[in-house]
Image: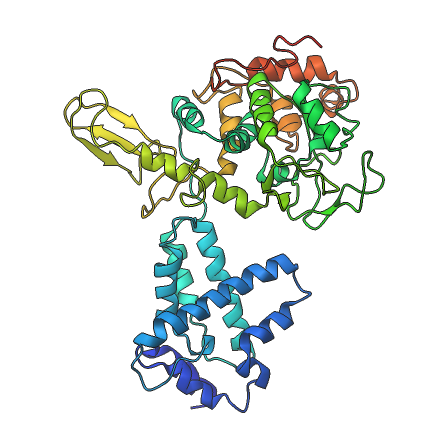
Length: 479
């Protein structure tokens, strides 16, 4: 039997019990690259540097370093085998399984996709060590495959009755969270598009907005300059793009390298009307938004305090909207607060039902006394086979479902396909069947006020978040 065959057998036969990786690495001593054996983490970073973005590499390294700390701090003190655990090259499958279950799956701030990604970073790291003969076998392969088998990475979107979504939005307390949820719910825009929106992309007919842009010396984008109560969503561009550039009106510095891309199909962007409810939420946010006088480009959604204010990034946006430990306004905190101990109708005992194969997905409480069912479908608890959470992307689906001509039963209003799909959501327009329709949809003869704003405002849903709203153009505010 060849040495290669011997090592492969050793790496899979009982490796969780007697640390075969430690013994096996001695057999590889002469073959393995010395740097990969002595400093696998540093060597991996040097090798990947330049292949991917610095931010992407840092994400991978944080996971690898966290796993090594887990090995040294948690696994090594408990290990009583003959081979000392000195670092990541001594990991076996059982260590990865424990790290997955004790550190990743137990973290309430991590969703299924994030756990999958972090295990994927570890698998890639060990794959490189395996290629360099610095380890025999990849200890992440089986734990990752098992996780993917038991956790759907593409679940169906949860069904949320309109009253439940309305109740959640009314529960929100902070202007940031309210505006951050309401903007995608009113427009279906993606998370990256929302993060990339700047103050220059807004034109709100209100003195508070006028004062904010005056203080920041912001010049509105010419595409919305003569369209009050509208918001511009930039056209498609990739991550690491510098926006705006020197040819962009209002540019006043070196620009900004964007950490998120825009997937919008329209290269010149989309102009979306702002209704009175969203207008009120945005003004409310602008009143408490930290000023960004020291920035060249002024983002709409910011994070920070008196010393440093920056554009919010994807992970921070997700934590603010979803994480229980990060924000009191999060989905998880809402879910925890609204759990039912008894039937709100009759006071009887309730049974929580989270069926895997129900016609409609969601979290339900069934009363054993009056037989009433109460929906709680904003967020599902962890541990279910079909893990269905409301995320930012859910807003995009909700907007489309509620306003489609076929109607989902969520909302009585309708926004025509050509407006809803292409102008607002920024999708490809697939409905063109004749030349006349194509010319109209592409906008050569389109009148924004009558062909976009009017049908949008006539169809958009209202969540009744405020006793009094600030009227918007087309809803009582004279142009």
